[in-house]
Length: 368
Image (tube, rainbow, N blue to C red; front, side, top):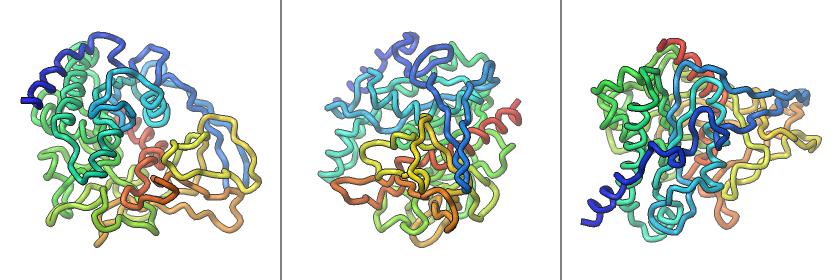
């Protein structure tokens, strides 16, 4: 009865109200932020890459943020606190160069509830997950009815947000009219299951993994771990039941199995209190004054499927004569210890943000 009551309560969320949205086009909000980045090359040269959102993008992006709320209950409220605004700055705003951005606030399962579940060993409460999903579904329905207008749309989510969108894709998009609008689904930092060695089936019945940059109506998904620290036994990410595997599509090279350089964008001030620190960005210790920094050809990634699981293996070792330190942090830490079962979960998207944005641009052109 409690679960039914909670889900029924979600119907009161009114996404016709602008305040129910973290981001909408044409507003000065969490997604209308400075994305300027300092580019530091291997010889130490620095240039500033200015960012400008697209004046009239041809497609939309529907973004659902990860678990960030520190509210006390199992579910968050619908206030755009600093945590929600910060994650939109880091994960969503850069997509404004290729799409109009829509990001609903939703009553997500909180970090508080997640920590309680981890301590007790119990799963996250299903009623709380259903309440969060009911909000995302209601926001999607409002977007389709009032804002889409026949445009293509990319659904973008990380962690809990990706889980919400995986369910939305399975229940509300596959096999329905909305499938014609789907440019792609970026479901990052969440276990999307496919049959071992296959690109379709499993969690999603007909939507395949993306294997070419011009492919549309497909899924980009991965979980990231350092190449020298693969998923440990009973890892939270990357491991699947027998006969299945966790999807891995490398956004820097969808078709290739080898390691390729990615285009990362990291927040200069760091990636959160639970993330191991970055930097110095270069060996001379010089400060970076832009909000973001990007380091060409210092991060490489390749999809790996082995006894440890299926994951995006990340290497960050610079050459001996590289002027950059290669001190890429972002591991989840608690009490000074790195929690290896989380991998590089906090920076999943940022490790290849430039590649994800470029891919959406190419998919947009192909869809149109």
